[in-house]
Image (cartoon, rainbow, N blue to C red):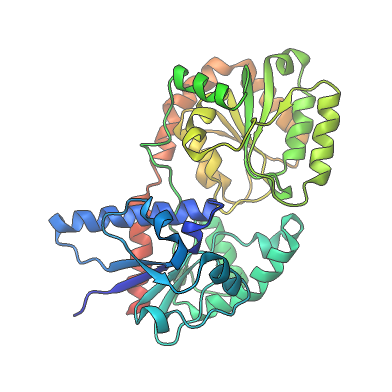
Length: 389
């Protein structure tokens, strides 16, 4: 029997704005790369994996340094390929790449004529929580995700909560929706030294002790509630700890920015880094935090809390959606619809920061170790194998 050939839509991997989806694709591909590497010794039969990328992104792809994963250039530059994808106007991909099993890791697939496909859907915020979504993007996803699911043999998702939402909403059998969790790379997310933390803080103009909020600035992340909670803390705490907001600006942020500016004008120490934080500096910024607070209304998984736990930093997170899966018992989960509870939890945590930090250093990395890219890569490969059978 011929070796299975798997093609992966690489648009999210080589996008100039490397989003959470880009990180997920990269993590899974690196896991697959390791599985292929090990197969030389285990004799396991693994597919040939090829990433389909626009013709002008080869250099970007090569930066990732895959050992066994190849690429195929689509005969359009990124700009035009992405625009056609967003309009649902790309021609059948297997006419160009050939027969195989195709993995579409960005909610929406590309048409195929004679091949099977696996779709990755991360959450259903665009259907279940439209009020927190960018309206244009929500309309696009609502229109095309259902069609893509109908064309896909398997629909991989990233948490048990998302799995239940997808099976309920689209009336799918659970066996058709496997879960391949995101993970942290233990070679990247670990507690950094005081020297490295100090260097990175200088680089971004960060001063003193801080409470960290690490997320895109968008309504779903519920940062307004965190800002209000911070401003209700005793002055002895706000004098000692700033609130540091790290993340790119998303949508519907005007009211949030106005609110932050008004609180800063009142004298509250709410800050942002002096420039965009590079991925390589995230572990040091996380490691330097007294705690990370993640009050999101809804998550497909919730990577920042897991990254903080991997670095041994205390976490306070909302108890909704998939966040209990990510945080487990290593952090503190609260009902975020009770803002007074957030104020009390931050205050109590900082009041006992020595004990809480010791627990985070002990239990946080253990929680992070429950998730691995190798496990998730195998789940995705299994889905591709089952799709072909």
